[in-house]
Image (cartoon, rainbow, N blue to C red; front, side):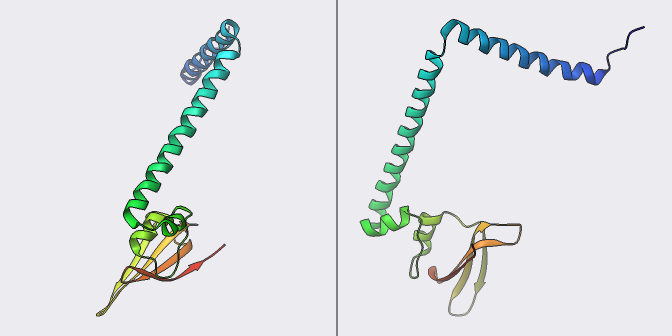
Length: 142
């Protein structure tokens, strides 16, 4: 008497058959069209992706130049730099939104610590201190 197929074995058989059919389809595709069409397709895909990324960079540069009217400042922001005296908006344009923010509001000023580069749930590789929305210092761990 032969072994009976279990329900789990039958459930696992469906995806295996689907993968086999996909593999056979790919093999037939290459058999019919050879490697030329897939290579051309991949080349076109790479060309399209790099072109779209280039357009995104150009649009971002144009936006930042219109916003700040200072090419040297824009180049620092695009390079991802941060510095003392940098405004909160410039910091966001440079590094993006922080992963977390600690905020303390005093009588005469607002102090925030913007946290970047999470290393664990409570540890960050970069903490930038802002007073009244201006960078006054940072702590960077390698």
